[in-house]
Image 1: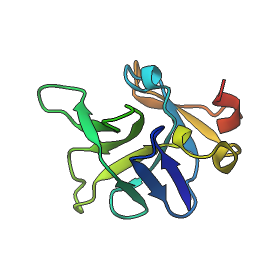
Image 2: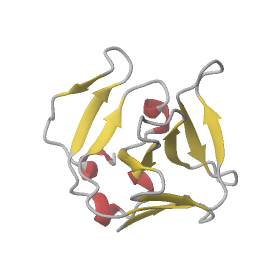
Image 3: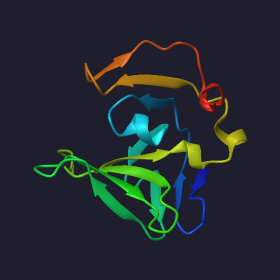
Image 4: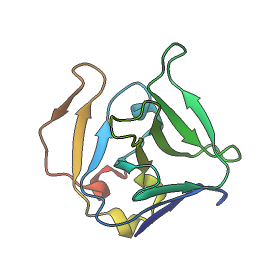
Length: 132
């Protein structure tokens, strides 16, 4: 199980099982936050606990919200606001909040969320290559 915590320790996330590849997105939010995402569904393999506040990136018809610690402002996760047809809610946690050794060798997928809204080819990098 992977775990992540905000800087002050008030909010946490857990991800059970293999996180798979990690996504680096270049959308207007992700590039500013510097987040690296691991995905699943809320209440299934991913759980977020502790106090969080949310930011919805669009005023009209937002499709996701960013979850952050109200004390130290670390971005913990994003959560979809539209349930999938089977009633599940997509969520992703920021693996930059996990212990570096636990995620260092996970491969990175790149997603162009700015222009094409499409996956980009892998370039062989993993999380440890994105720390700096």
